[in-house]
Length: 320
Image (spheres, rainbow, N blue to C red):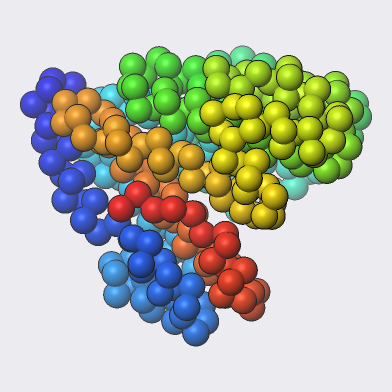
């Protein structure tokens, strides 16, 4: 895309950013009476007037419809942001084939691969029909599930492969923003996995399979810390660029997860301003994904009658 075309796309994104939800509005949602009150407030902000999950799906589709409109010939630049949906759909297909179930309602609409084709390829063991980034992991996950019936190990294989694919796609994109975001995305996932594995006392072999390599964490040292216990994981994290996550872990696991996720928003904020690259477009997509995630958490909390304090603890920082 020529620089002036990027400039036009970024100008459109700047207008869209004005309608992003800020922290103050999310606070109002948290304080709302119930889920219906939240849905009404969101509708007043221009969100789809529909039941919760339909509304959230519609808002996600709006984001990607805009990107398809702005860069119709260069969607591959956004593969790093689409691969998570691909691996989610592959996981649904693998488990559906194993259980002889219909995965249709579990599929996400976005992604680079057609969900029904993924399901067909897995069902028929037509691994060559899968895209390169899904092929090896899909076959391995299916084999593991068939031979061990270990659904958790199947998840680990696909989740690790997703992280590897996201990082590789971000590097291919040539976007400094996507590369730095993907690095933190992998690091955040590794840190969450490490704490969960420490709490459930997973063996070293399992931990090593689950952690994805990244530049800002020594995953071999992190894996060794995991088998020594959660305190050792926290001590290890204090020695990394993500030391504040260890302090959050002292508060609660929910606070720790929130701090890990906030690292991603903090990474994209200062890199959104170059009008001649895809970075502002990618930053907008990530901001919208974070926004939808926060709203989903709030609605779920209201639906399950959680206290305002409990819901507030889960809400992430916003882009604006």
